[in-house]
Amino acid sequence: MPPIDLAAVYDDHAQALFAFLLNLTRSEPDTRDLLQEVFIKLARSPELLESMREPRAFLLRVSHNLAIDLLRRRGTRQKNYEQWADERSSPFAPISDPDESAFREALSAALGELVPEQRAVVHLKLWERLTFEQIAELVGVPPNTAASRYRYGLDKLRERLRSLYDEIR
Image 1: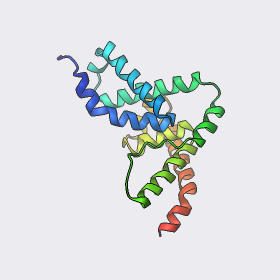
Image 2: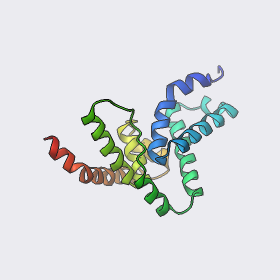
Image 3: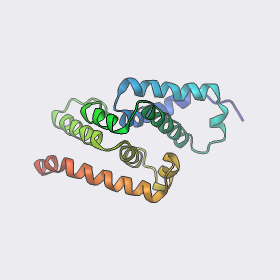
């Protein structure tokens, strides 16, 4: 089997991993550190990726595990939930349209109010288009738990964004 082209892997997956990690950590510096850690791990052990049928799923799993480890190292979850709710980091690219910018800001704030477990599942389902089975395997929970986290997360997002939706209609 030919050696892994780390630059190609980075080009193919870094943007998606960055968005996923930013959505979890709500901190751009932490996201950059974790992304670097993912690719350092891969550079040190390229054979990790050689046997994988779905490199992105593997990289998302590694990213998720590193993010969870970071969150655990930081102390109690409640402290982190409160901190994330106050931060305004966004996983979305900047935009010049004021209406779209306002929507993205509201969506980012609403995502920030979700607990990390729900935020991870919502991100993986909506942006990575993974199935609940794939998400369950990635985050280490049963498929029904992944589906429940998604449903509860969407319910919270709907409730939080309802006024914006009513304004648009």
